[in-house]
Image (cartoon, rainbow, N blue to C red; front, top):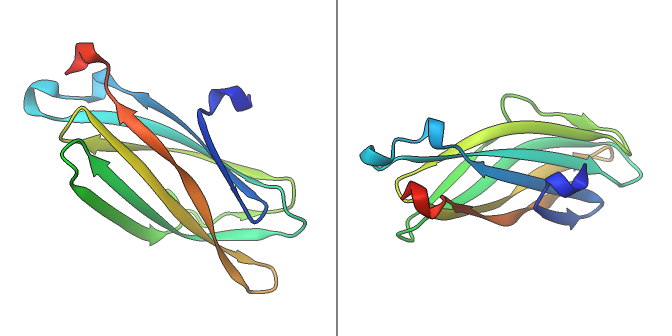
Amino acid sequence: MKELFQHAALTSGVTVRVAVNFLPEQSRIEAGKWFWVYHIRIENESDQPVQLLTRHWRITDGNGDVAVVEGDGVVGEQPVLRPGASHDYVSGCPLATPHGSMEGYYTFQRADGSLFQAAIPFFPLAAPATAG
């Protein structure tokens, strides 16, 4: 199943995996709107539970314009991952250009109360040439 995910980053025992796909049926290219869906799997490979508290995304479009998105949890949840557990979610990203990228980090809290940031790997957003 790991081959589904094209991008991965490991930080402090937490692996963040990303699979991304362009969705032509959700895009309105004639109106300058391209849309991608991304599937995130967060795996706790550490020896203690961790809770995802916040997210921080840096989204760059093909013109170099950057949007920073921050907030609590992911898709309305702040999951606790026991050692060996994983959490999956799916979300989407619209852009005004046919190319761009995303990257960022999640802030986690360990059972002892300490915080750490787990990297979300850089991944490109690229519409096929036929969609541009």
